[in-house]
Length: 423
Image 1 (tube, rainbow, N blue to C red):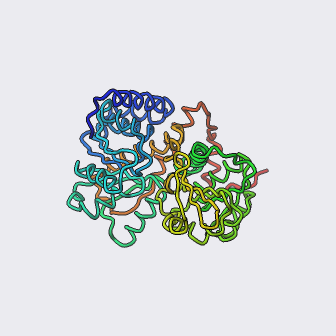
Image 2 (cartoon, rainbow, N blue to C red):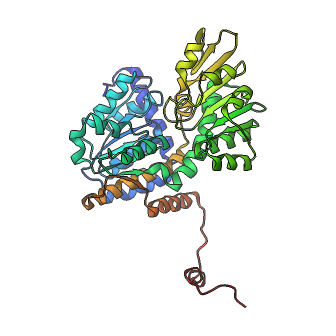
């Protein structure tokens, strides 16, 4: 942790505190959990180590865990997603040890993860599975004291399921990403809005009328496609799964393969969680001025090395926008060095969406801690259904939305197999 004393540092701390409080006022579900936990102290004495995007919303998740009695430490899950004012405020105002700085080297990035593990967490929290991966490789000596962990994003869940499949996973982990109140809303509405926000902040281009290629039609891709279409773009979807491809067609989008899409697209966004879905052959086919961005967790979806090898020059033309000029004079613009465009070029998801995702995180940690004596098998667990429903109910209550209740007659009808058509 840094020492914060200079005038600029003091201003940074105050700005971080202001923005954290702004987000807090838009996270009523977390607020209600924190208020309840202040009395219950369900996490008293539990050391929680988190590797998440260090944003204002994450800060409020840390505050909620702290309210429940946890000893929390935090590092970043992406070198370009860190908000330095939030780091300053977490360390100095909220007394939460936070190891992060925007734009750090890969070496320092992993050094920060190691610093969190040095605090010997009993519960891990991940967004991409880097923390738990290091725990299982470099710090296996800590595993005996680990109750379990949680994972926030699709890419991390994929890695964890691979660990489970080959017998490497040594602790139970809750796949928070797969909760209905996470992927239905965070991945679709959050990623859709924040990706558009990142692209527009970085480029200030008009999207209406442009051919906008979305690669991957999972929940994130669905949200991106919907927002792009809403702005007036002509959306083209590239997908490998026949069911998702069919859904995209039925949703009104043109669906094709990457070879055809590369030749007609003006804007490209990856959201697959896979490797090199945009490669050298695609760059070679793209029209002059094509803009390429990534909305997946890791910077592997775009083959940047291939683009670098093809280019005769590279120049930073706007903050977060690199121009790659090819020998034939065509220019390709890469946003955020191929990292998460919504966090590297903007502020990530709105607090109202992260309110639900982080409520799932908090309640899943409480579930893990409460069942610590049950010797749960080391595997990937779904978020318990009662937690998912609780989060939805709390969110609806905060929004002032009323639910219809079933009558006793209706309950009996739904519970009976004998009743059908009546006179």
